[in-house]
Length: 297
Image (cartoon, rainbow, N blue to C red; front, side, top):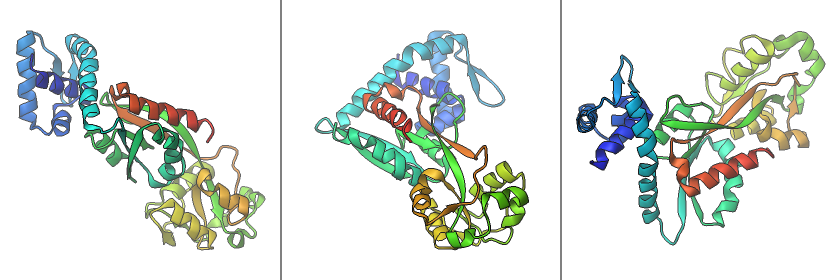
């Protein structure tokens, strides 16, 4: 049996779509369809049920995928090992710049002395990150979106707490008690610092804590949370930031937390890999090390 046909079959099985599999394989959709039909003729059994949106594997297709996928993944590992020099394995990692810099890369540093090489891509859009992972541009991704379907596998990594902050000068008269009494009304005249015009952090906080809409526009847009932190600390306006990122500024007094809600807004990070690739030793070690380190974050 042609291994190329099996590779196409496994990709379709994991992607749940001929179109998606064609993009991942760099083939046309008719070519993928033709290969699957050829494999079905060779086996004498249908492998997929065609539906309006994508395909669903038959019981025969599920059995074949279960038996063949580990062996194909092992062959991929053998090929990848041949590409590495001097026993050094390279992990291609993708994630948001702030969290990856502050938490992920330091957690993986011990593995570098054990022969792991890291190549990092900073990505701000979760969907683009997942598309890059599915296409093979990355080995491991840290995202705030949980992927759907069988092509990618995710594991919850850590819950990020969001904090409403401002400089001490901006915080005058805005103690926790005042905000609890007046709510978002007390903040209406304060400028806002954000990472995007859509106000993703402020909007989520206002909806969760105040059950209201935030100001219509921001005074400062800085597409990096670290830049937003520095702008807020300099007095440009209030901001909603991850606690891990602004912890030092809060402890030193450069920033003040304006409110301590009983249930603070959270955002979950996920570790995401292509299904089956945790069989690769270097990837499994990095995955395990990040889960272990996250317990102390």
